[in-house]
Length: 159
Image (cartoon, rainbow, N blue to C red; front, side, top):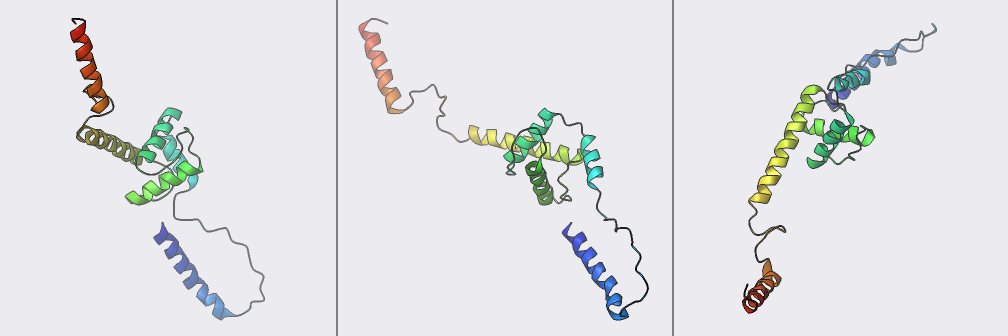
C-alpha cells in the first residue's frame, strides 16, 4: 500500500513537471473526472467480507482471535473502526494489503492462527509443571496441616 502511494506520488510529480515549464495559459481550463485509484474500493472489500457470511457470533470470534494474537479490539460483534484497525494491522503484519476487511482466504488463515495459538497456550499450561489451583494434593503447608488433622481426628474416632 505504501509502495502504491509512493508510485502515484512520483507519477504525479513527473506528470506535472511539464506544466511548470509551460507558463500561463489564456484558454479556460476544463474540469476532469477524479482519477481512480488502483486499490479495490471499500465496497468491493465489503462485498468480499460479506461473502464469508459472518454472523454476530463469528464476528465476536474474529475479534477475540485478534485479541489473542495481540491485536486488541473489543469483542462486541460489530466491525467498528477499532476492529477494522486491528484487522488492518494483522493484514499488514502478514503481508496482505491493509484494507481492514477480511476475505475468505484471510479469514481462514486468521482463524487457523487463533486455533494454533490456543493449542500452544494449552500445551504451555500442561507442561508448566507443579500444582495448579485445581490440584487435589496436599496444597502446601495449610493442606499438610489439614491432612495431619484429618488423620488425628480420624484415628481418635476410629474412621
